[in-house]
Length: 409
Image (cartoon, rainbow, N blue to C red; front, top):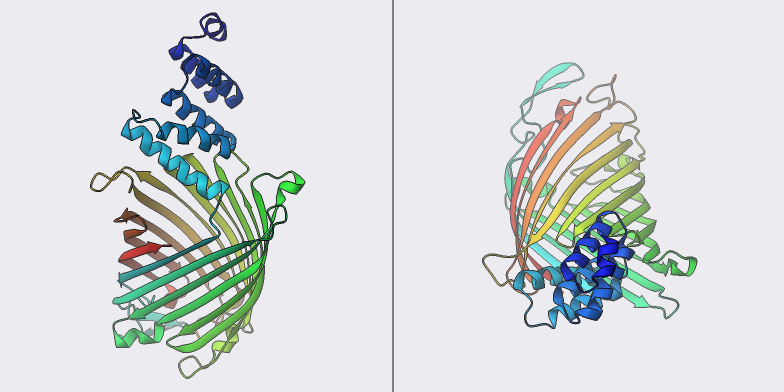
């Protein structure tokens, strides 16, 4: 094929066939050479520019890829479906190569849960080998709630080889409409602050190292639940082709407070340490596969609250042309599932003095992000969670549905 292409250098179809074969074999440089040579014979050809943009994107040469994609959009004869694909690539390039210094989002939703308090599904449980009948207040209860989540990110350029100061803030609030569930209303706040370093100085392109302090504050039923100072280290890399690697190690000292509803809450006080890795692979900018694995250790003053947790999850996000609204407002379908295993150190003497608690939790979630304006979107979501435990009180399942609206800044 190479010999035929050299003998007939103006054959565009042959050049594309050779470039496709080279790309399939992983020889992106060979494919690029063939297509760039064709630009000499067919300048300003959108098909060539688009394919070159994709190949440079796969190589991680984002600025060159952006240049070719922008040339495609400047051509008025480009079909709409090609233009939509180019916009998706440019959107991903903006996140990978040049993240904005400020971003924020607000998500507000109405939520219904079949088991809002994660109570057991039956009134009959075994405590210390004796069967007990629980009151209706102690079993799983359905409920409606109002959920609000806000995020804010700001980075300050230190003008030193790409190093920055990074600040992130998260606020989470859920309020149940049923007064009998008000004791599980939750408010949680977290901030992180610290420097991030551009590792290109040591030869790691598109990779950053973050060091940061953590501050957490939580209220349950409007009473102080815990506060937690901590620290973390994070490695974020776009260096591998079409991939994002996000690895973190964080530790917090969670100080739980007693109150009239939870008089022994302070027995949960101790360090929480988690190490986790997220990996995302972009088959295209519109199709992303994501996997996550983490291990977590929670120490506690009472050993029957101390536990070790491991988890794995996987999912994908598929962005496609919106058939109902404008083409530049694509839909995104998200689907994910995972498992969590939790083992406690010692038996809880009030439940089973001979056997420590072991929980296995399976969950699955799907959502659709439906843009209704440039920075606004509707987000319907459904989740099912099932926990099996050797402690009857900890066995439950829960179906959650919600409809939210998201605003990006």
